Image (cartoon, rainbow, N blue to C red; front, top):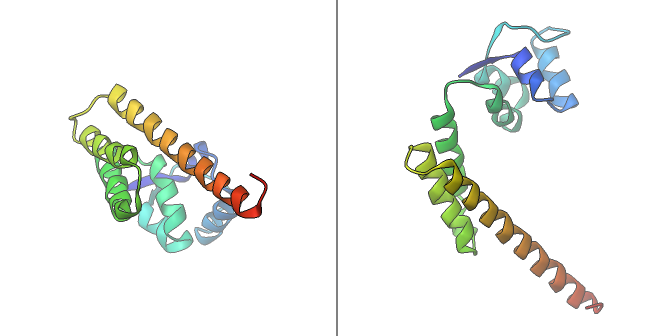
Length: 132
């Protein structure tokens, strides 16, 4: 998978990682020279390489399926079925078997689940502190 510094720059990368990548490539400004995601991985590590996938064209299905695979590695930690359902819809969407509307609904449900979990944890902490 390839991209360019100009494409990466369009997504407003974090300044530390951006400077590190430019320094590694011996560049002072972005250009349109082809850049492999593996080069970003070697220079900046996994987090930045994954972040830079948004600047890659033509691999939407593969990138989506990889994201689902990553989430499935921690699926056993998911306690709310809405999160697991969102993974299933995301996988179906990547394979052309779900609509954008279904994907958006699953995303919204997963966000609601995250909000409910956050509120539950906040209440637990307040109770522990004796202020609830």
